Image (cartoon, rainbow, N blue to C red; front, side, top):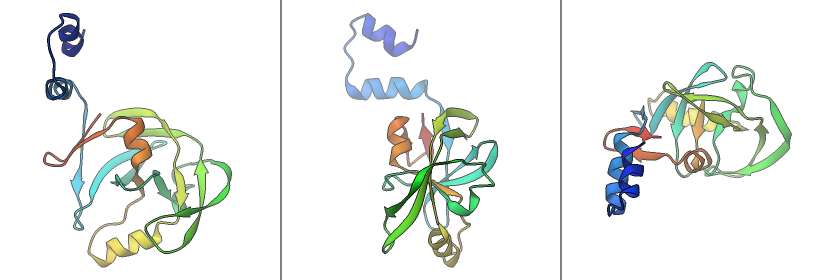
Length: 158
């Protein structure tokens, strides 16, 4: 029985901060790196293939660079649609079927990505001396998995 469940069963008063601290002691962590552009990056495996994903709380959906569809063995689900993002104009996007996703050593629930041309993102990163990314972990993933980001320790907390 976890400590938090035990405390609740014993009717011990817990404030939100106590619950948070108790939960964090038993949580799993994923290490993050900071790019030259100060973006948070994590190592992942998508369908068994290594990937570098940028963690972006402002991105509504997680996405993978469309040129990497075959490399990650991603299967299309549905018809192409127009996506709108921080860049100018609309872009063609396609949804993938759910696929295997590992962050660090942790296998997570299957997750679907949006296939999107991220060339403009990688060109910007390259122009600032940063390495390219394979995709983005967006708010859909972060919310679904109840992820907490510890910016100071550079960790995703599962």
